[in-house]
Amino acid sequence: MKSLKIDKNRLILGIAAPVLALVAALVITSLIMLATGKDPIGAYTLMVDYGSKSDSQVWIINKAIPYYLSALAVAIGFRMNLFNIGVDGQYRIAAFFAAVVGGALTLPGVVQIPLILLIAVVVGAVWSGIAGFLKVTRGVSEVITTIMLNFIAASLIGYFLQEGRLAVKDGNIFHTPDIPESSHIFFLPTTPDEINGFVFIAAAVGFGYWFMLNRTRFGFDLRAVGGSETAAQASGVDVKRMVVTSMVLSGAAAGLVGMPILLGEAHNYGNDFPTGIGFTGIALALLGRNNAVGMAFAALLWGFLDRTGAYIQLEDYAQETVEVMKGVIVLCVVIAYELVRRYGLRRQQRAVGEQLAKQARNARNNDKAEVSA
Image 1: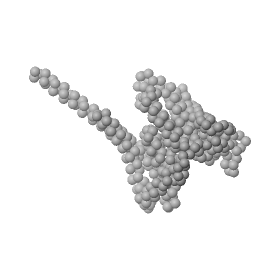
Image 2 (image 1 turned 180 degrees about the horizontal axis):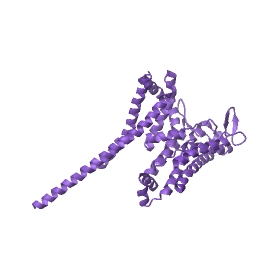
Image 3 (image 1 turned 90 degrees about the horizontal axis):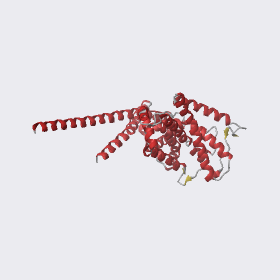
Image 4 (image 1 turned 60 degrees about the vertical axis):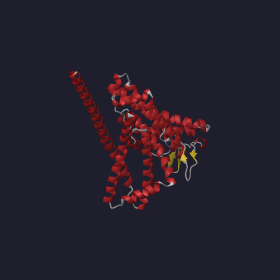
Protein backbone atom coordinates (compact mmCIF):
# COMPACT_ATOMS: atom_id res chain seq x y z
CA MET A 1 0.00 0.00 0.00
CA LYS A 2 2.87 2.31 0.82
CA SER A 3 4.58 1.72 -2.54
CA LEU A 4 1.31 2.52 -4.32
CA LYS A 5 1.21 5.88 -2.52
CA ILE A 6 4.78 6.67 -3.56
CA ASP A 7 4.02 5.84 -7.20
CA LYS A 8 0.94 8.06 -7.04
CA ASN A 9 2.95 10.99 -5.70
CA ARG A 10 5.58 10.48 -8.38
CA LEU A 11 2.92 10.42 -11.07
CA ILE A 12 1.36 13.65 -9.76
CA LEU A 13 4.73 15.40 -9.67
CA GLY A 14 5.59 14.09 -13.14
CA ILE A 15 2.34 15.43 -14.62
CA ALA A 16 2.39 18.69 -12.66
CA ALA A 17 5.40 20.19 -14.45
CA PRO A 18 4.17 19.96 -18.08
CA VAL A 19 0.61 20.94 -17.08
CA LEU A 20 1.91 23.95 -15.15
CA ALA A 21 4.12 24.90 -18.08
CA LEU A 22 1.30 24.68 -20.63
CA VAL A 23 -1.07 26.72 -18.45
CA ALA A 24 1.59 29.38 -17.90
CA ALA A 25 2.38 29.41 -21.63
CA LEU A 26 -1.30 29.93 -22.48
CA VAL A 27 -1.57 32.79 -20.00
CA ILE A 28 1.59 34.53 -21.25
CA THR A 29 0.66 34.05 -24.92
CA SER A 30 -2.84 35.40 -24.20
CA LEU A 31 -1.36 38.52 -22.63
CA ILE A 32 0.89 39.03 -25.66
CA MET A 33 -2.07 38.72 -28.05
CA LEU A 34 -4.14 41.11 -25.96
CA ALA A 35 -1.27 43.60 -26.05
CA THR A 36 -1.33 43.45 -29.86
CA GLY A 37 -5.09 43.92 -29.97
CA LYS A 38 -6.00 40.31 -30.83
CA ASP A 39 -8.56 38.04 -29.17
CA PRO A 40 -6.77 35.02 -27.60
CA ILE A 41 -10.00 33.09 -26.99
CA GLY A 42 -10.88 33.43 -30.66
CA ALA A 43 -7.44 32.18 -31.67
CA TYR A 44 -7.60 29.15 -29.37
CA THR A 45 -11.13 28.34 -30.57
CA LEU A 46 -10.01 28.40 -34.18
CA MET A 47 -7.01 26.20 -33.36
CA VAL A 48 -9.06 23.60 -31.51
CA ASP A 49 -11.80 23.50 -34.17
CA TYR A 50 -9.36 23.12 -37.05
CA GLY A 51 -7.02 20.77 -35.21
CA SER A 52 -9.85 18.39 -34.33
CA LYS A 53 -10.85 17.78 -37.97
CA SER A 54 -10.07 14.30 -39.34
CA ASP A 55 -7.62 15.44 -42.00
CA SER A 56 -5.82 17.61 -39.44
CA GLN A 57 -5.52 14.69 -37.01
CA VAL A 58 -3.88 12.52 -39.68
CA TRP A 59 -1.56 15.38 -40.65
CA ILE A 60 -0.60 15.92 -37.00
CA ILE A 61 0.22 12.23 -36.48
CA ASN A 62 2.38 12.09 -39.62
CA LYS A 63 4.14 15.30 -38.60
CA ALA A 64 4.72 13.98 -35.07
CA ILE A 65 6.56 10.82 -36.22
CA PRO A 66 9.92 12.47 -37.11
CA TYR A 67 9.49 14.87 -34.19
CA TYR A 68 9.18 11.93 -31.80
CA LEU A 69 12.22 10.14 -33.20
CA SER A 70 14.23 13.34 -32.89
CA ALA A 71 13.16 13.75 -29.26
CA LEU A 72 14.20 10.16 -28.51
CA ALA A 73 17.64 10.78 -30.03
CA VAL A 74 18.13 13.87 -27.88
CA ALA A 75 16.77 12.17 -24.76
CA ILE A 76 19.32 9.35 -24.91
CA GLY A 77 22.06 11.93 -24.51
CA PHE A 78 20.13 13.92 -21.90
CA ARG A 79 19.84 10.87 -19.65
CA MET A 80 23.64 10.91 -19.39
CA ASN A 81 23.95 14.70 -19.16
CA LEU A 82 25.19 14.74 -22.75
CA PHE A 83 23.85 17.53 -24.96
CA ASN A 84 23.67 16.08 -28.47
CA ILE A 85 22.87 19.25 -30.36
CA GLY A 86 23.92 17.58 -33.60
CA VAL A 87 20.78 15.51 -34.24
CA ASP A 88 19.93 17.86 -37.11
CA GLY A 89 23.16 17.13 -38.96
CA GLN A 90 23.02 13.42 -38.08
CA TYR A 91 19.58 12.79 -39.52
CA ARG A 92 20.28 14.85 -42.64
CA ILE A 93 23.51 13.10 -43.58
CA ALA A 94 21.97 9.73 -42.71
CA ALA A 95 18.94 10.43 -44.91
CA PHE A 96 21.20 11.63 -47.74
CA PHE A 97 23.36 8.51 -47.92
CA ALA A 98 20.35 6.26 -47.37
CA ALA A 99 18.66 8.01 -50.31
CA VAL A 100 21.76 7.62 -52.48
CA VAL A 101 21.91 3.86 -51.85
CA GLY A 102 18.14 3.46 -52.10
CA GLY A 103 18.04 5.27 -55.44
CA ALA A 104 20.89 3.20 -56.85
CA LEU A 105 19.36 -0.21 -56.07
CA THR A 106 16.27 -2.02 -57.34
CA LEU A 107 15.93 -4.81 -54.80
CA PRO A 108 12.62 -6.17 -53.51
CA GLY A 109 11.05 -3.88 -50.91
CA VAL A 110 11.37 -6.44 -48.11
CA VAL A 111 15.13 -6.32 -48.62
CA GLN A 112 15.70 -2.74 -49.70
CA ILE A 113 13.65 -0.98 -47.00
CA PRO A 114 15.54 -2.66 -44.10
CA LEU A 115 18.81 -1.96 -45.98
CA ILE A 116 17.96 1.74 -46.32
CA LEU A 117 17.04 1.91 -42.62
CA LEU A 118 20.27 0.11 -41.67
CA ILE A 119 22.38 2.55 -43.67
CA ALA A 120 20.63 5.50 -42.06
CA VAL A 121 21.15 4.08 -38.56
CA VAL A 122 24.83 3.30 -39.18
CA VAL A 123 25.62 6.69 -40.74
CA GLY A 124 23.85 8.52 -37.91
CA ALA A 125 25.64 6.41 -35.29
CA VAL A 126 29.07 6.99 -36.86
CA TRP A 127 28.50 10.74 -37.22
CA SER A 128 27.44 11.07 -33.58
CA GLY A 129 30.11 8.63 -32.42
CA ILE A 130 32.79 11.04 -33.62
CA ALA A 131 31.68 13.52 -30.96
CA GLY A 132 31.66 10.82 -28.29
CA PHE A 133 35.14 9.66 -29.27
CA LEU A 134 36.56 13.18 -29.16
CA LYS A 135 34.97 13.77 -25.76
CA VAL A 136 36.56 10.74 -24.07
CA THR A 137 39.94 10.93 -25.83
CA ARG A 138 40.52 14.69 -26.06
CA GLY A 139 38.04 16.11 -23.57
CA VAL A 140 36.26 18.17 -26.24
CA SER A 141 32.72 19.18 -25.27
CA GLU A 142 30.07 17.30 -27.25
CA VAL A 143 28.19 20.59 -27.68
CA ILE A 144 31.04 22.10 -29.69
CA THR A 145 31.78 19.00 -31.76
CA THR A 146 28.14 18.26 -32.63
CA ILE A 147 27.57 21.87 -33.70
CA MET A 148 30.65 21.75 -35.93
CA LEU A 149 29.60 18.36 -37.30
CA ASN A 150 26.25 19.91 -38.27
CA PHE A 151 28.07 22.37 -40.51
CA ILE A 152 30.36 19.67 -41.90
CA ALA A 153 27.36 17.47 -42.70
CA ALA A 154 25.60 20.34 -44.49
CA SER A 155 28.75 21.13 -46.48
CA LEU A 156 29.30 17.47 -47.38
CA ILE A 157 25.72 17.11 -48.57
CA GLY A 158 25.99 20.36 -50.54
CA TYR A 159 29.13 19.08 -52.27
CA PHE A 160 27.64 15.78 -53.40
CA LEU A 161 24.12 17.11 -54.07
CA GLN A 162 25.06 18.45 -57.47
CA GLU A 163 24.35 17.35 -61.01
CA GLY A 164 27.04 15.00 -62.24
CA ARG A 165 27.92 13.82 -58.74
CA LEU A 166 25.23 12.10 -56.67
CA ALA A 167 22.23 14.17 -57.71
CA VAL A 168 20.07 15.00 -60.71
CA LYS A 169 18.49 18.35 -61.55
CA ASP A 170 14.71 18.67 -61.61
CA GLY A 171 13.77 22.27 -62.35
CA ASN A 172 15.35 24.35 -59.60
CA ILE A 173 15.72 21.33 -57.29
CA PHE A 174 18.74 19.05 -57.05
CA HIS A 175 17.93 15.64 -55.60
CA THR A 176 19.19 12.08 -55.48
CA PRO A 177 17.66 9.51 -57.86
CA ASP A 178 14.19 8.41 -56.77
CA ILE A 179 13.81 5.32 -54.62
CA PRO A 180 11.85 2.61 -56.48
CA GLU A 181 8.15 2.44 -55.70
CA SER A 182 8.57 -1.08 -54.34
CA SER A 183 10.66 0.41 -51.51
CA HIS A 184 8.15 3.03 -50.41
CA ILE A 185 6.80 2.64 -46.88
CA PHE A 186 3.18 1.50 -46.58
CA PHE A 187 0.38 3.79 -45.41
CA LEU A 188 -2.59 2.90 -43.24
CA PRO A 189 -5.84 3.17 -45.23
CA THR A 190 -7.43 5.85 -43.04
CA THR A 191 -9.76 8.56 -44.30
CA PRO A 192 -9.71 11.24 -45.52
CA ASP A 193 -5.91 10.90 -45.60
CA GLU A 194 -3.55 8.03 -44.84
CA ILE A 195 -1.26 7.61 -41.84
CA ASN A 196 2.40 6.90 -42.52
CA GLY A 197 3.19 3.28 -41.61
CA PHE A 198 6.45 4.44 -40.04
CA VAL A 199 4.36 5.21 -36.96
CA PHE A 200 4.80 1.55 -35.96
CA ILE A 201 8.58 1.76 -36.25
CA ALA A 202 8.59 4.95 -34.19
CA ALA A 203 6.47 3.24 -31.52
CA ALA A 204 8.86 0.27 -31.52
CA VAL A 205 11.86 2.58 -31.10
CA GLY A 206 10.06 4.34 -28.24
CA PHE A 207 9.37 1.01 -26.53
CA GLY A 208 13.00 -0.01 -27.05
CA TYR A 209 14.13 3.25 -25.45
CA TRP A 210 11.88 2.63 -22.41
CA PHE A 211 12.96 -1.01 -22.12
CA MET A 212 16.65 -0.18 -22.41
CA LEU A 213 16.49 2.49 -19.71
CA ASN A 214 14.30 0.66 -17.22
CA ARG A 215 14.84 -3.05 -17.78
CA THR A 216 18.50 -3.51 -18.68
CA ARG A 217 21.83 -3.26 -16.89
CA PHE A 218 23.04 -0.85 -19.57
CA GLY A 219 20.11 1.46 -18.88
CA PHE A 220 20.84 1.37 -15.17
CA ASP A 221 24.49 2.23 -15.82
CA LEU A 222 23.46 5.01 -18.19
CA ARG A 223 21.17 6.58 -15.59
CA ALA A 224 23.82 6.10 -12.91
CA VAL A 225 26.43 7.97 -14.96
CA GLY A 226 23.88 10.71 -15.64
CA GLY A 227 23.25 11.02 -11.90
CA SER A 228 26.90 11.07 -10.84
CA GLU A 229 29.90 10.10 -12.94
CA THR A 230 32.11 9.79 -9.86
CA ALA A 231 29.71 7.48 -8.03
CA ALA A 232 29.13 5.39 -11.17
CA GLN A 233 32.85 5.01 -11.76
CA ALA A 234 33.38 4.01 -8.13
CA SER A 235 30.77 1.27 -8.56
CA GLY A 236 32.65 -0.20 -11.52
CA VAL A 237 30.97 1.51 -14.49
CA ASP A 238 33.26 2.35 -17.42
CA VAL A 239 32.20 5.97 -17.86
CA LYS A 240 34.15 6.57 -21.07
CA ARG A 241 32.65 3.53 -22.73
CA MET A 242 29.18 4.66 -21.64
CA VAL A 243 29.73 8.13 -23.12
CA VAL A 244 30.74 6.74 -26.52
CA THR A 245 27.98 4.12 -26.52
CA SER A 246 25.33 6.67 -25.57
CA MET A 247 26.41 9.05 -28.33
CA VAL A 248 26.39 6.19 -30.83
CA LEU A 249 22.88 5.15 -29.77
CA SER A 250 21.71 8.76 -29.91
CA GLY A 251 23.06 9.07 -33.45
CA ALA A 252 21.49 5.76 -34.46
CA ALA A 253 18.09 7.04 -33.35
CA ALA A 254 18.78 10.33 -35.12
CA GLY A 255 19.45 8.41 -38.32
CA LEU A 256 15.81 7.33 -38.37
CA VAL A 257 14.40 10.86 -38.10
CA GLY A 258 14.36 11.50 -41.83
CA MET A 259 13.13 8.04 -42.83
CA PRO A 260 9.37 8.72 -42.57
CA ILE A 261 9.85 11.60 -45.00
CA LEU A 262 12.28 9.80 -47.29
CA LEU A 263 10.34 6.53 -47.57
CA GLY A 264 6.83 7.92 -47.25
CA GLU A 265 6.76 11.36 -48.89
CA ALA A 266 9.82 12.64 -50.77
CA HIS A 267 11.32 9.32 -52.00
CA ASN A 268 14.58 11.18 -52.61
CA TYR A 269 16.88 13.62 -50.84
CA GLY A 270 16.88 17.09 -52.35
CA ASN A 271 17.86 20.60 -51.34
CA ASP A 272 14.24 21.02 -50.24
CA PHE A 273 14.46 18.18 -47.69
CA PRO A 274 13.11 19.35 -44.29
CA THR A 275 15.69 20.75 -41.87
CA GLY A 276 15.55 21.84 -38.24
CA ILE A 277 13.80 18.73 -36.90
CA GLY A 278 16.80 17.96 -34.71
CA PHE A 279 16.50 21.27 -32.88
CA THR A 280 12.78 20.70 -32.40
CA GLY A 281 13.68 17.40 -30.71
CA ILE A 282 15.53 19.30 -27.99
CA ALA A 283 12.37 21.20 -27.04
CA LEU A 284 10.27 18.03 -27.17
CA ALA A 285 12.70 16.06 -25.00
CA LEU A 286 12.51 18.84 -22.42
CA LEU A 287 8.72 19.03 -22.63
CA GLY A 288 8.34 15.24 -22.41
CA ARG A 289 10.87 15.03 -19.59
CA ASN A 290 12.86 12.38 -21.49
CA ASN A 291 9.95 9.99 -20.97
CA ALA A 292 8.92 7.83 -23.94
CA VAL A 293 5.20 8.52 -23.49
CA GLY A 294 5.68 12.15 -22.48
CA MET A 295 7.70 12.87 -25.62
CA ALA A 296 4.99 11.27 -27.78
CA PHE A 297 2.41 13.71 -26.39
CA ALA A 298 4.90 16.57 -26.84
CA ALA A 299 5.43 15.60 -30.50
CA LEU A 300 1.66 15.53 -31.08
CA LEU A 301 1.35 18.94 -29.42
CA TRP A 302 4.03 20.39 -31.72
CA GLY A 303 2.30 18.86 -34.73
CA PHE A 304 -0.96 20.41 -33.57
CA LEU A 305 0.68 23.83 -33.23
CA ASP A 306 2.25 23.53 -36.71
CA ARG A 307 -1.06 22.60 -38.29
CA THR A 308 -3.23 25.18 -36.57
CA GLY A 309 -0.61 27.92 -36.66
CA ALA A 310 -0.73 28.01 -40.44
CA TYR A 311 -4.53 28.14 -40.33
CA ILE A 312 -4.97 31.08 -37.94
CA GLN A 313 -2.81 33.21 -40.22
CA LEU A 314 -5.73 33.11 -42.66
CA GLU A 315 -7.88 34.65 -39.91
CA ASP A 316 -5.63 37.72 -39.63
CA TYR A 317 -3.52 36.50 -36.70
CA ALA A 318 0.21 37.18 -36.86
CA GLN A 319 2.38 34.41 -38.27
CA GLU A 320 4.63 34.63 -35.22
CA THR A 321 1.81 33.87 -32.76
CA VAL A 322 2.37 30.12 -32.68
CA GLU A 323 6.16 30.48 -32.77
CA VAL A 324 5.94 32.73 -29.72
CA MET A 325 3.71 30.13 -28.08
CA LYS A 326 6.29 27.41 -28.73
CA GLY A 327 9.10 29.49 -27.30
CA VAL A 328 7.09 30.39 -24.23
CA ILE A 329 6.18 26.72 -23.70
CA VAL A 330 9.85 25.70 -23.72
CA LEU A 331 10.77 28.51 -21.33
CA CYS A 332 7.90 27.66 -18.98
CA VAL A 333 8.81 23.98 -19.10
CA VAL A 334 12.33 24.64 -17.85
CA ILE A 335 11.04 26.86 -15.03
CA ALA A 336 8.15 24.53 -14.11
CA TYR A 337 10.37 21.44 -13.93
CA GLU A 338 12.78 23.24 -11.63
CA LEU A 339 9.94 24.42 -9.36
CA VAL A 340 8.42 20.94 -9.21
CA ARG A 341 11.85 19.37 -8.61
CA ARG A 342 12.48 21.70 -5.67
CA TYR A 343 9.00 21.05 -4.29
CA GLY A 344 9.53 17.28 -4.53
CA LEU A 345 12.93 17.59 -2.86
CA ARG A 346 11.45 19.59 0.01
CA ARG A 347 8.73 16.97 0.45
CA GLN A 348 11.33 14.20 0.61
CA GLN A 349 13.41 16.16 3.12
CA ARG A 350 10.30 16.79 5.22
CA ALA A 351 9.35 13.10 5.11
CA VAL A 352 12.88 12.06 6.14
CA GLY A 353 12.89 14.62 8.95
CA GLU A 354 9.52 13.40 10.25
CA GLN A 355 10.74 9.79 10.14
CA LEU A 356 13.92 10.66 12.03
CA ALA A 357 11.94 12.63 14.62
CA LYS A 358 9.58 9.69 15.05
CA GLN A 359 12.49 7.30 15.56
CA ALA A 360 14.02 9.69 18.09
CA ARG A 361 10.73 9.88 20.05
CA ASN A 362 10.41 6.11 20.05
CA ALA A 363 13.98 5.79 21.29
CA ARG A 364 13.32 8.27 24.15
CA ASN A 365 10.14 6.45 25.09
CA ASN A 366 12.00 3.14 25.15
CA ASP A 367 14.72 4.63 27.35
CA LYS A 368 12.09 5.98 29.79
CA ALA A 369 10.40 2.61 29.89
CA GLU A 370 13.70 0.88 30.71
CA VAL A 371 14.47 3.42 33.50
CA SER A 372 10.98 2.96 35.00
CA ALA A 373 11.41 -0.80 34.96
